[in-house]
Amino acid sequence: MVAWAVTNPHRLRELLTDPRVSKDPRQHWPQWIDGNIPDDWPLHTWVSVQNMFTAYGRDHTRLRKLISTAFTARRTAAQRPRIEEITTSLLNDLAATPPGQQVDLRAAFAYPLPMEVISQLFGVPDHTRADLRRVVDGLFVTAATPQDAQSNQRELYQILHGLVAIKRTTPGEDMTSGLIAARDDDGSRLSEIELVDTLVLMLAAGHETTVNLLDHAIAALLTHPDQLDLVRIGTHSWDDVIEETLRWQAPVANLPLRYTIDDIELDDITIRKGEAILAAYAAAGREPTLHNNADHFDISRVNKAHLAFGHGVHYCLGAPLARLEAAIALPALFTRFPDLALAVAPDELRPVDSFISNGHRSLPVICAP
Image (cartoon, rainbow, N blue to C red; front, side, top):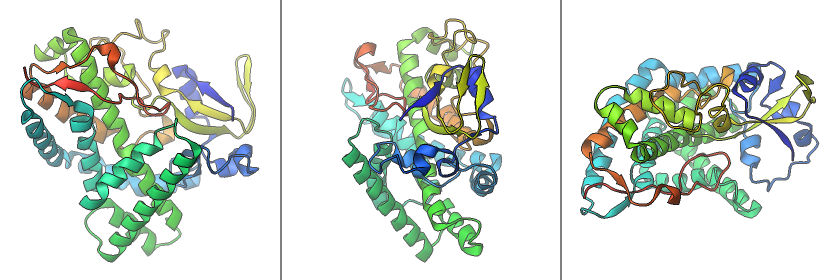
């Protein structure tokens, strides 16, 4: 399968807002419509889901309106006490680590914080969270074998259908119950498959971007102590750290897929009707014509423009929540552990096995001497 990878941020913005570009393969991708995409394709879930991630036109408007009620400014702000409580609990656990002992900060802090936040928001039972975490991680492993990808997809849907069954029997004050009620009150608003696939989107995208944002922000500050000093002396803010991290290391490197519903002329290039487009967000953040020394992490740069959360009608609804989590977690971590240090050389940090997710396999640190 061939796709156009769009790396230039100016071009990418144009295409992300062009009405001739769709995210619905069922309407606008001939390869899908003609049955040429096998069920065991490792990216199958990213294309096959039926939720606002792959919706186009009125369907997208309908689905986004329904989900957006969970991510209003007021509801996002209301998450602050819960995020602070989870952050404090995780930092207490880290503080119990024996002095000088290595700990994986991605696994012990960057990952569980957003996963706990989104799990509570959607009412995921405690006994389900470990399995859900494992299969959600599997969605982003683009190096998986076709067999493993299919097996992971089946287990993911088993877990989410089970969650829906629980919430139908015993609804609560959570977003899963809210989505079920919206669908059951008016079946035309949210079909059963849209309901479950919306949970796929929310529970996967709802935490992965924040995991990688925290991961890269921590790694960046530990490998650029001069930048950390700028925050500590008050010259620059934690917001500067967050936005520069999003530009420098977009949490989602590449996002499949979009499809042209008509020929699109781009200077000397024509993207033909029905061809696929890959949004290369990480590359767009390093565009040298937009950013001086684009490969350098510099929280003092004036222009930190990025597309890390997308652009246009598909802009990430959870972006304010991700920023809030980072704005709470990062200062809390570096205040609690002022001598925090990497436990390995920076070049020993290895990326996750994914061309979608942009993070480290682990982030080994020493919390205290």
